[in-house]
Image (cartoon, rainbow, N blue to C red):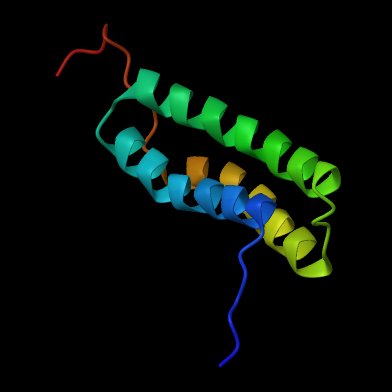
Length: 91
């Protein structure tokens, strides 16, 4: 039986991918500050996964592809969000 090892850098990238639906739901519910915090956290994980991969010698083509998928997915989170509503709009 072969044991699959998860690289630390890849785990951080997976965390960023798992954050995306959470950020989307928060955006749909109108929690702008939490969305902002989620986006900052996603940015930190983007930096951290590359740093850890280089520092720990965990660079791999699979990790690079996973990071590229996460990088392209993050801006698309905004595509699903409703437009912001101004507090001055009347209903």
